[in-house]
Structure formats: structure tokens, C-alpha cells
Image (cartoon, rainbow, N blue to C red; front, side, top):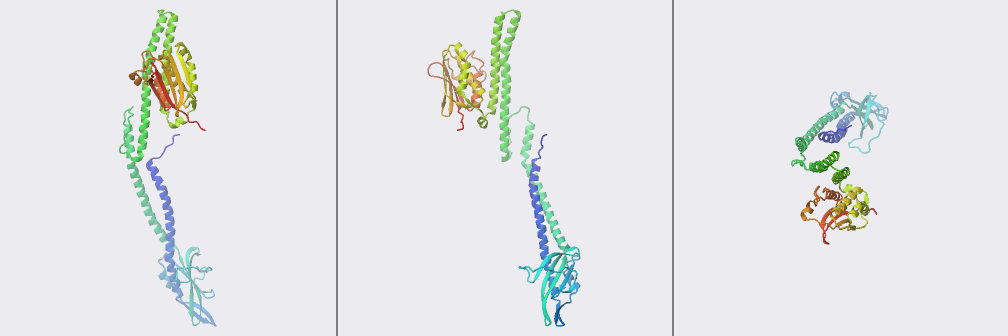
Length: 471
């Protein structure tokens, strides 16, 4: 099943919104906690003021020789400290020995300790408590009370419900969320607009490619593409170039095959018709047919080899060369010379071969085809001597095939590596050297044809890089 990928716009939008949303969520939670803390700080001061107001209305009386704490506080005196009808205040005053003096008797008593560090100039502490099933904020003030009748430490507790505090914190939270939502919307709009503009050249390039005529493999031109898109454009042009070369090679192969095979097939048809009509002796007709079939077979095999070499050249690069097997070119050269020995003997040539071990990274068929074509070409054009030597020189393997033929003119040397360009009339199909040139190019080497200075004849010299063997 083909996997579908989202658009770049949505990938960027989600890629930006996801971390931003997580950050906003954390920031919102943190802000809500800070808002609660700020509300506690503000309203705790109100609780402290309420407790101090109660403390100012305490008195000490002497009853039976014992100091007793009295309170004249009315609940209505606390109304100014209530912010609105959403909060309620409860209080409780305990005497010197913890006895109930005034206020709400069921308000939970304080059993804690005063903090060591206190930001207020009073003996006060604050904590959260539950009163009648409702959460409250409690302030405990230890108020010294002294009079002629005695002195002691009164405990004043003031509790306030948390509705107003939570309402204030939620209000701050909602206002913040609205601002954060506006920020997210702005981010989405910016991303969409920026991506839309950034991908504009790509859409125009896509439209340009869609509108191209069939078979148009000219390079892609995108002058307005951003710098980040240029590697993609260059890679596309490289791919289009390789595809153009491959298609051109296929067209040339079909055209050449049609041209080169048409003549021998026509000759073969005439020979068969002549044999059937009795115009030619059967044995002579079979001999002529055999020669025609051999030539057609040679041309077909060479054209297939040329196509295979072109495919090898298309795939050849440094990384691929590193994984090719190592072949000893010396062994292959001797094996090919042995295969062609009947032709050498038939031509009565003075033959000499000298080789040194030369490891080459290549397919065996490529080295064999290269060597066979060079030697076979030399056999066809020499009349006396054929000398072959293979040596390793400065990280290169050098194969030289020397014949004693007529040599080449400069004009012939320039076009011999082209397909179907024979050096001399009747010298063959003209594919051998084209195959050699393609193989050498795919292996990163060089080939040259020079008339040698020791009389008539030609030196075909091939240089290929030696393989680097692991120690």
C-alpha cells in the first residue's frame, strides 16, 4: 500500500504548533498557579488586617484573681473586610489557656507552629483548611494582650472562603488563554503565508514540467527558486540528463541494429531463395549462408555487448567501483589469447605475449570483452607480427597490443571509437573499438591508438587503475 505524506504546509504548521501548544499549556498552568499565589498574597493581607482589627478589641479582666480574656468584637465589624458577597469570613478568639472566647466555636483549632521567617511584622501564619465541607484560607495571629488585670497571648483565627480567589485566578487564566489563542492564530497564518510563498517556485516548476511536450528532456530552469531548492533542481537536471542519454542510446541502438542487420538478412534471404531454386550448388549455398549468418551473429553480439557496456557506463561511479570484484587482468589476457590462438595460427603471425599480475576491479566479462576486441582487431589488420604485453606502472595497469599493419591516419584515429566506424574497408562492423572505449571509460581508464616508431603498425594501449587490496 502506497504511503501518503502530508503537505509541507501542514507539516510545518503541526511541527511549530505542537511544541508551541505544549509550551502554552505549561505556561498556562504555571500562570494559573502564580495567579493563585498572587491572590493568596493579596487576600492574606486582608485576613491579617481582620485579625489585627479583632486583636484591637480584646480586653483582660480579673476574675477571682485570674486574668480572663474578653472580646467585644461583633461579626458586623468584619463586613468591611469582605470583598463582596462571594466571600465569607469566619473568626475565632481563644484565650490564654486555649478556651473559647468569641466567634465560631466549631472553627477548627490551630495546632501548628509559627514560621521561622515571616514577611509580616506580626506573629502570624497562613494555611489552607476545610470548614463545614468548604475549603477556606486560615490566618492565625498570636496577639499579646496586657492590662492592669493581667497579660497573656490570645489566639485569633480568621478564615475566608476561596471563591473570590479562584474567580480572580480563573479570570486571569481566561484572559491569558485568549491572548495565547490569538498568538496561535497569528502563528498559523504566518506559517501558511510563508510556506505558500516559499513553495510558489516549486508549484510553478511543477506546472512547467506538466506543460512540457512529450519527449522534452531539456534542463529544468528555475531562476526564482530559493537557495535551499537549488540542490533539488540540480539533481533533477542530472537525472534528466542521464535519462536523455539513455533514451538517445536506445534510439541509436535500434537505428543501428535496423541498419546493420538489414543487409545480411537481405543477403541471407537471396541465398536461401537461390539454393531452393537450384541456381547454386547446395554445398556452396550452405557455405555462403554460414558466412552470412556468422557475420550477422557477430554484429548482433557486438551490438548487445555495446548496449551492456553503455549500461555499465551509466551505472559506474566511485562507490560502485569499490564493490566490484577483483580480477587478475594477466590471467584473463592469457586466456583470451589462448581462445584466439586458432586465428593467430591461421594468419601465420609471429606472436609474443608477456604479462605481469595486474589486479583490476571489474566484471570478468568486461575485461574479457575489452581484451578480446583489441586482440581480434589487431589480428585482422596485421600481416606479420603480433605482440602483447601487460605491465603495472605507477598504480596503473598498461596493456599494449602491437601489430604490424598499415597503421592509422590522424583522421581515422579521431573517429575509430565511434560505433560502425571501421578503420579500413572490409575491416569489420566497426563496433569493437567502440565497445573497448565504453568499457575503459566505465572503469576509469584511458585508451589510445598510436602508430609505433618501429616500422609500420599500430599500438593499442589501455590504462586501467590497479585495485587497492586490503593488507
